[in-house]
Amino acid sequence: MALPILYSYRRCPYAMRARMALWAAQIQLEVREVSLRDKPAHLLQISPKGTVPVLQLPDGTVLEQSLDIMQWALAQHDPQGWLHADREAVNHFISINDGDFKKALDRYKYPERYPEQQQLFYRQQGEQFLQALETVLQQHRFLLSDSASVADVAIFPFIRQFAAVDAEWFAGSVYPRLRSWLEGWLESTLFAEIMQKFPTYTEVAL
Image (cartoon, rainbow, N blue to C red; front, side):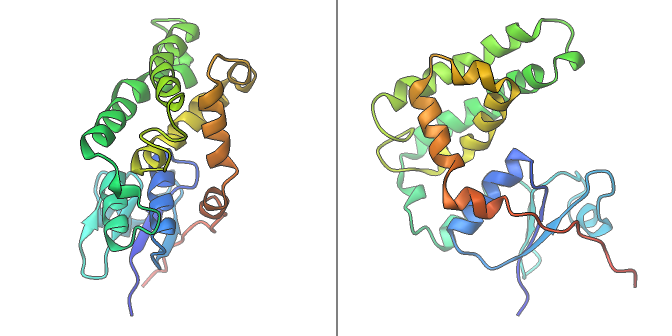
């Protein structure tokens, strides 16, 4: 029986959150770790945009967005109830994360590409989201309640990236609840499983 095929890149935060949902949903699949410098022809054939993650289902359906992959996976099986959270609240947090915060993160991580401002300026832009997350985490263990939701999983890889830009600064920052939340995900069995190293996929010439 054919398995879904996931084109992924281990360190990509979008691919990371897709893998977390797929693993949590216990979906059996074929993972194809791609080289971003030498993308497989099949990937470009089914998804010309050439970014990961991309999931091709056995019936030929192609899911090209990480959130669509997460939604599909958890619709199959959601043992931890990640989809049970209020949809409007989930969308609110993810839209900020994927919009203004991701923009600030890119500039904070690669300030040499954005010389219009100093790196500190971009960090402070990103901190607006960190402050919002710290506030909600003072009320419960996870972003929307005392149980994890798809919002936590979708946002976690990006906070991980932001924290890693200057780990010493983040360790001493005024976000203790956010640090604890991040540490919980980093130390989880799920994260260890989805970060296993797959060999780079090489297409077999016909």
